[in-house]
Image (cartoon, rainbow, N blue to C red; front, side):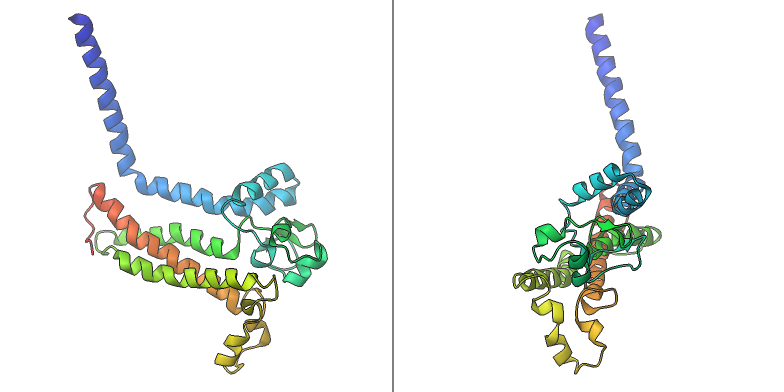
Length: 242
């Protein structure tokens, strides 16, 4: 009987300990999400830093890990420690090799003169960085802001789906040769009101780069707006659900 009682006490203590831990985690979920998302966002920027410092194994490990999350095409990525923040496909080909094969192009990390690319593309930078930033904006508004309906999240997902899908279709014609590379359709629609550099290529400030930035931010912010109020409600908060 004594042994059974002792076992019951131990089980009760274990349950109580786990319950206390779960309670603390539920109260700290926002901090946990911010820390994890911050690490996810920050590590790709450390890859070029490590390469610059000569810590090539650590840098290449980050590139390898994030290669499963992103195409890492260098002409659609940011570079650090070089002459410019990004480079055209022609410049990448001249520095790497004259290829349009995306599987070869994505292997180009950079050079000491050009700098080294961030471990994921500009679209991924915009999308994932917008999540912790939007979460920090949402937190002080959490008791007043209604959760975004799921149909609203679907609407915010449409731009990134359309932009990403059109890039994929365009790339089937070959890197640098698709309709999204020259965007002649857009030049016709706008009567060529903007400089040629706005329509062609992926350089910072071009239509393609702006669309990847805007659509990434819209979707990332939409995920926070739709999901975080619901998490907050499930953990005992009181947001106003849509």
